[in-house]
Length: 202
Image: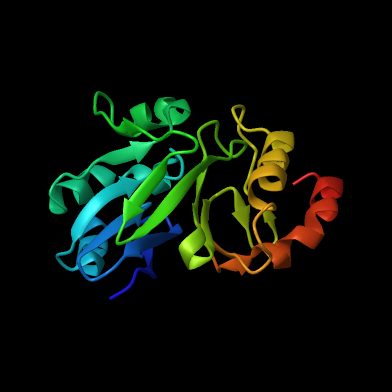
């Protein structure tokens, strides 16, 4: 069977809901942001080989369950951009990951996920473009209705706008945007609102 995108929503005990994404086929998958409930994510994987675990950024709600999930999945590589190591260390002190590099292409089930560094929400935020499936996994960089939050000292609104403009809005209008929280959207739906986001400042 050809590669496809699969979706799972997981919940924390603190009321957070996160999107977990799987890209692959009946034999292997890449898991994007296995949040909150490692056993639920493992059940969704359903015994397939996990080629890699990719973290779009280092916030606790995206990474806290990753070590537990990795153990259930046979310890595949855990990937995260180096610039978010300080956030990783808050949750997993002393543990390691394999740095996720801008421009890298991650293969699974005959398709590639192209890593695009899209900082602003966090310094190491990355989006994953899957041209063959006409989608991008945006983490908390781009949502339905605007950019991700930039309320922390290490965040930057101008930077997230630049990331969205230069690295995501160059994609075709029909590209599905699969986000870290909430509903998916498309590039064509969000692009016309850019000036409004800049004017409101968030």
